[in-house]
Image 1 (cartoon, rainbow, N blue to C red):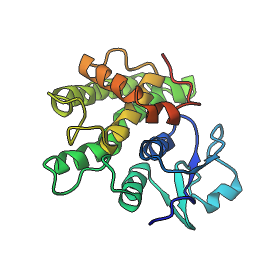
Image 2 (image 1 turned 120 degrees about the vertical axis):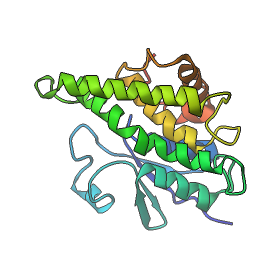
Image 3 (image 1 turned 90 degrees about the horizontal axis):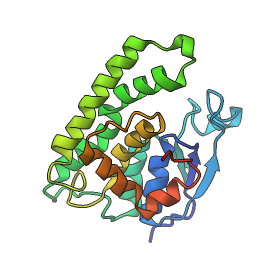
Image 4 (image 1 turned 120 degrees about the horizontal axis):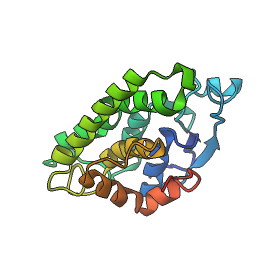
Length: 214
């Protein structure tokens, strides 16, 4: 039996560490939460650089080994502490879709969503660029349409006929759009999907201190 009692998640509210916390809650794995100060950049204090050299979150410590990159951590935890239905196995029909959407939540969605975040909320007002915000919004609309018309067409979840880590990956990016008030015009299938995700006990537990917007 693998001992998972030493899992330690370095976390800050509203960041990608929510993905890892959500997965840990869904899998019922015990873990210690280490809150990292995120008000300043880089995050944490000088000592945190020994955990994550770039002083970003998340980081996951497991028996003296440390990982960062949220989607990689999801794959690591499922592989090390599974089996779990949050994973889709290579012998399942939707294995390709699972990998596609698992990584789409970061690689495919990150640019438009973070540019929209930066140029509508995050940057000081004088540093925001209206043209970049407009372009990022248009690209975000395309991303959400892709989810509605392909990822969620005739499906409640993205792969495997069930909730998986791919939904955790994508769901976090939808959460960011919700935070910055750029989600109200999302396609109805995407809104319904997000409602399904956030009704899950795992999400409720993982986001308990997140001040999730209505």
